[in-house]
Amino acid sequence: MASDQKFVDFVLEQIENAGEITAKKMFGEYGIYAEGKIFGLVCDNQLFIKPTTAGRAFIGNVVEAPPYPSAKPSFLIEDKIEDRQWLSELVRVTVKELPEAKVKKKKKG
Image (cartoon, helix red, strand yellow):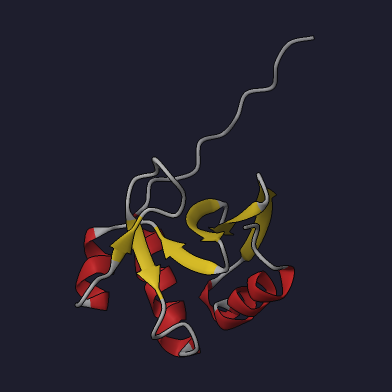
């Protein structure tokens, strides 16, 4: 089941205070980016955050699940998705720990 644009918009509104947030459609689902780094996915109208040490410490009682079949487990955010302040802070601590986005080289034509 592909994610609903309304749910993606809701997630983006919830984390709008966490920096420059964007979403890109990918295979019927969405990648969520902050400052150019992918930190989460919206799949089947559920929010998944990349696992980091800081994110795990911030969340405490973590629920992990794969966002799609054969994917590595990510943090599944359910109970606190409506807590804007909490969710924005989770995004900030997660993005801070992720490596810088790789610059793609242009292919020579």
